[in-house]
Image (cartoon, rainbow, N blue to C red; front, side):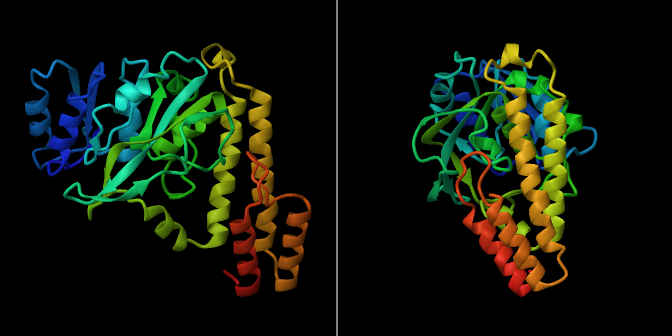
Length: 326
């Protein structure tokens, strides 16, 4: 759990962890210079709870991205769950996820959630594209897709596959390094299968202080220029390819489904699509942009690298750019 001035909601979240039917090995709280009594609440609730608790106090604020990942590095468990300070876990969250722990082919477990307001009243469902429970093979997702951190439970060995200091830029927020959940999602789907649970195992709280709400990503993208955005995606994807190429030789021992060449081909194709579409945004006329779009259609650049399905939104966006200049 990465914390920063979370006193308003953290008690409810901590109690939901302590009361899990499958008790966690440990609770790790990494705090970014809170000054509102957050840590006093943590110490009061975890004292005598029977679960080993580690409290890390960062001398300088790391930001949630590094805070989550650096806290993960000190974990002793075979599986790690990211935990936001203001949500509430279903009592059987870890029990439900633990059913997959014995399968060495699974690198990550994800689930749906229920969105709630600041008073924990239900607002709606947060499915993240999960329609039914099941197992997804490696490379089954878009290269840039992510599941939100609060819904991820992952094998600790993922942290040994690549150095967190060697991460790529965040294609959503290019001024930052990739967020903790997107980093784990990237590594997990490169090397193993993902277990999807179509069960809302977390109450995902929406309030005025959310670092990232369910609509924040859309707002951020709307404010960015398409050329800048594409360059960020190109830089990130090129770095993904570099990282996968440099995975240690022994990765296959921990993750038997890892296929280096297949992973590289998947990312090379994604990178090629981005670079080809980038010509559209740098064309000097509408006619030239339309010609590049036609070439992209012919060459399959509007087909998802993981499924082969048409990316109608991408095509529509490029047509809009050609005609309107945005």
